[in-house]
Length: 69
Image (cartoon, rainbow, N blue to C red; front, side):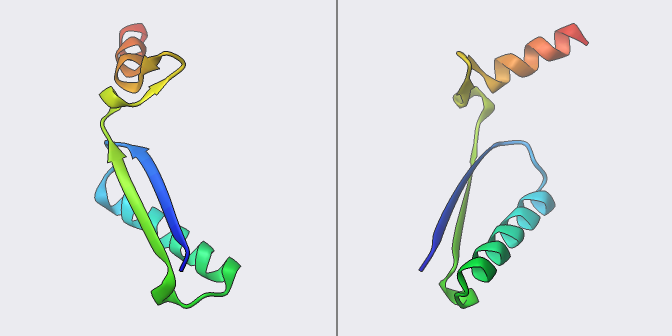
């Protein structure tokens, strides 16, 4: 039973997240040749304040970008 874990920053609309789940499900099913029922896809939304890259949070980066625009 394949299990795929995806982490994304919170803020996308439910339709986009559902499309991602479906696309990943189909890609895993087709590439591994397994039945639909055996594929598990877990999507976790993480607050931008709790996601750090390059020493700053995504929230801080977003704030900087909005000030420079």
